[in-house]
Length: 232
Picture 1 (cartoon, rainbow, N blue to C red):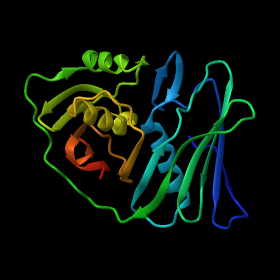
Picture 2: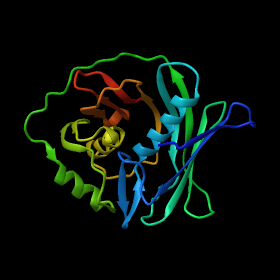
Picture 3: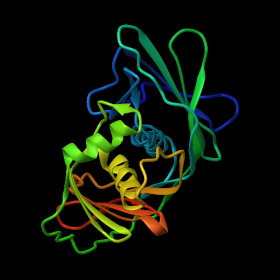
Picture 4: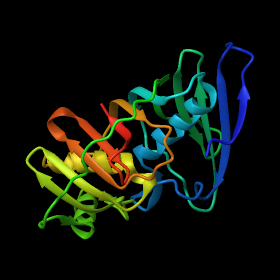
């Protein structure tokens, strides 16, 4: 996902990774299709930043990303290579750039740290009938201009400001939380950032998401109710 790693001589403690995608990102990286061009989802950019922090920062525990900002879609044009570069400073500031020729574009920024793991479990949702199916969710995203969206939810249940979703794929857990929050607020907005997200080192596969739209909070849970991702 990250590519070749270099520990930079200056500034001390800084790191860089660079990879080249030949018309497509690695398998499992979530994509939307915007005006016919494949672009990485916000969740995919967060996954890249989290992988960099996990590899380079000292300590064991959760990766915590703060002040995440999405500046521009990272397009992966079919038929030509895209270079992707991730940098991380000694202070935990990270940036993700790409270039399909010689011009570098900034896509996402934020701060990263390693925090002590919290083995948190919550009761699994027990939604009844009346869920919103994947087809309806897809139509809502397409109405916002995103065609052929990467849709990580099989079904979504709304209960006032709360929403529960059943995940279709692990790679889309964060995207599922963001999409569910938009539906719970009655919006079809594309997020421009995240205040704080916690990524567990657990290898458990997320199965469910729960969001509270009014609080801007979201959780991804494995089959036992263990929290593997939290938007705080």
